[in-house]
Length: 360
Image: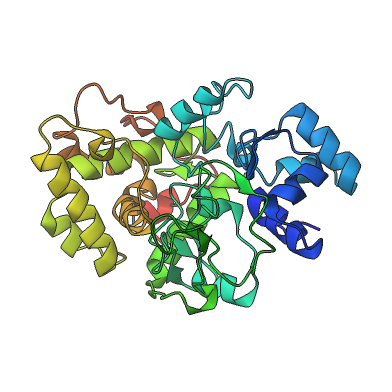
């Protein structure tokens, strides 16, 4: 059975081990809609979305409800965290276009070393671009394997986008990314023990921000500057604030941010340096890009949190004004961030009017 919050590739790997099959063989028997070759199968939009045919086949093979199956896909976050309105399962390039725009990892995943040390189950939310820290263990998520150097979850690097059919049964306690030991030699699974991955402890303030973002992502309350907003508006605001911070934040902003750990500050500063030196731009220098690492995501959360939880939009706008001077006019500010001095905070807002005025 799937674990609550588990990602689809994680579930398929566990099914494969239970049945003593390779991941590719398990995918075939489960009924995934795949493109096949001699040494690998390539499931359509693997872990991103299920086709109607694939959902029916897996449901028939396993007895799992279609809702359970779809809740393990990135498409679970469509309409809120992610915009999948242009996804066409019959058009593979549409997935590539989404991966260049949306804040999610369409291949691979981040990971919590502590969670994987307890149980080899990979969480779906680790694949979100804003995934930074584990709220349970209070550690920074890990992006890449120290041994093979690849992002986690690319267990088939010899066959991009495919699941191997001839590599034997996985050891779920290991990295399992395919790596070549020598030129011309057959690739072997990476032996990095997941329980031995290094971990970095983060302050509780950063954990609280990650919890707030995840609560909004999973359908809970979404509040921006004291006002309840739709989930999609919350993440539009977060992306705009991230872009503003990337454009206008200065060293003093980083130094005064209590939730900012050194690893996050270094990742954020490195991005700004690359962008400053870039002559012709590029995907990694775009203000609106997804955080490329967990450390960068942690910096985005730490820097933007005070603005997201400001008591009113006017207060948030005042704090944002200095960063906005560096933001290109082409980057449109979301409506939920625009200044409105006549607004009244709604019931349930983060800061009550009486508290704003200092009364008890």
